[in-house]
Amino acid sequence: METSLAPRSLGQPGFLSDVRAFAAIIRREWTIFTRYPSWIIALFIWPLIFPMMYILTARALSGPDGSGLSVFMQLTGASDFIGYIIVGTTVWMWQNIVLWDVGFALRNEQMRGTLESNWLSPTWRFSYLLGHTGPQIVSMAMFIAITALEFGLLFGVRLNGSVWMILLMMLAAIPSIYGLGFAFASLVITLKEANAFVFLVRGLVMIFCGITFPVSILPGWMQSFAQWLPQTYLIHGIRAAAFSNADLNALLPDLIPLLLFGTAWLIVGYFTFVWMERRARRTGAIGQY
Amino acid sequence: MPDFAIEARQLVKKFPARPGTGDKKANGESSTAPRRRWPFGKKEPKAMFTAVNGVDLQIERGEIFGLLGPNGAGKSTTIRMLCTLLEPTSGTAHVNGYDIVKQANDVRRSLGTLLAGERSIYWKLTGRENLEYFAALYHIPQAIAKKRVDELTERMELKERANELVEKYSTGMRQRVAIAKALLARPPILLLDEPTLGLDPQAARRLRELIAELKQEGHTILLTTHYMEEADQLSDRIGIIDQGKIIALDTPEGLKQRIDQKEIIRLEVSGWQDYIGEKLRSLSDVENLVARRQGEADLWEVNLQASNSRVVLPKLVENISQNGTRLVNMNIVKPSLEDVFIHLTGKALRD
View (cartoon, helix red, strand yellow):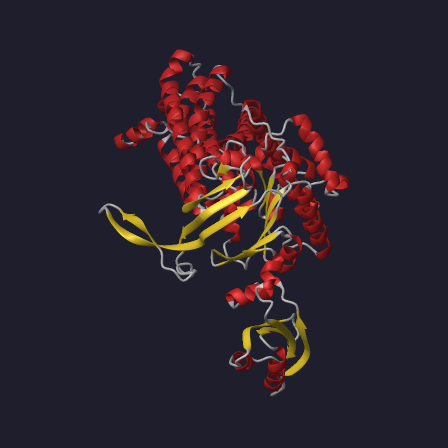
């Protein structure tokens, strides 16, 4: 046999190679995302449609002279009921989109047939999920910016607070929102189908986190449950930062639990992935459609 | 440098049997694994399907080794274990000297793998974008990657259309991108799972030429196929796998010599009936008869093995030519690998 001719691999493992691989995953995801033009329509239409349902309901329930709205604003402490609603609905849509998008990232690769070919390379496997998150955060930031722009222009919603404080709240929410997405993505590979779980999680956020009403109107046990959902703190914190001019000190009661939940969800997300990856090697789940 | 490019000892892979699929006793064995029934802590047996059952392989460096077997024989499961997508239930394997479980990342660095063919690449990226992406995943430095992508698009005759989306390519072109992907890091060992599946004859021929060239360049190649001509033409040695076990392993010539003392009779028959097959099988000199319909027409190819064709032929003609069944053509041929497979298993490779 011609052992002297054996080729030498061109791969050069190392930290920089891992960084380049991670950047390549982000670039690939972004390129594919931009090659489906329907995302532009979704980006402009969705931010309006979903909150409109609640805004119109609020108008209808406020009575012919709109007096109901003043009661609502008194209860919530909000100066603008539309702004109050769009903060809640936007957080709900953020979590919902992450569950569908990041949550089904690996499953979509699996159905496309590309998951195995990625898995065959020496790249750290968790980076496929992390890499998918980069373009998702960018597209979500665009979604939120367009929401603010559309409601500012069409409904005259105005900020009474610091944009930086709003951004700080949103940054603090990224670990918990995406950590849940990572755990979810790993479970979907194993279960193959998880629509019911998406409906459950977003239903919980809708009911318990007060997306269109203050959590204080909920019965005691529901308020206790709401404290275990990071979205409760995110919605409350953004409303305070955007419309009550809350400073960092005022936001700490929301920021600290949000960061603690974020740490917990990232750990849960990572270890669920590790568990899934190991289980898939034993059962062959990666190659099953 | 380790002795063998690939070495497997008693590789076994069992999967939980899927209810209603008949998996449970696929290879005639009942197999159980402990299963916990919460909360009582009692264990009940869980049905298992054995896909690979004690495979031993020693593949030399620079060799093309063909793993030949019908669908479901365990070829792909074996490859998936060797490329670290699956963990063996028991047994050990080393690729380029690295343990497939304990040194999985080193194994991946040593391998170029073609699995799932055209579906293994991104259709919404161009051919070039795909290769650049996978070059980064295989940790090839950027400058080298660029040259390598140019070199491979040229070699795979993709250069003209390298900047078009893969979704616009033909099946053969997509397969060529998938093969270029496997070659990107210039790995010493290539695992090619059914590389010519779905290709037109010309594309398949071109690919077989490429595989022969890669051997000349020093690559070790493990090739799985259920096309016996392909395995025969390309392989230095062939392992025939059936029901998860390697049932024969030798050079193509060595395998064929095993049935050299037999004569292979190939008949073309119109109006074939199953009962005729039963009658022929009952003849004392006839062994391993397999009948296969050819295309849409009522024309059947009947293969059988006999010790002495002069004794058997008159009996064959007498039994076939009745009730509208006609013998159309008849040949005594050299044994092929499929005849070896039939001899070993009593069934055709594509059954």
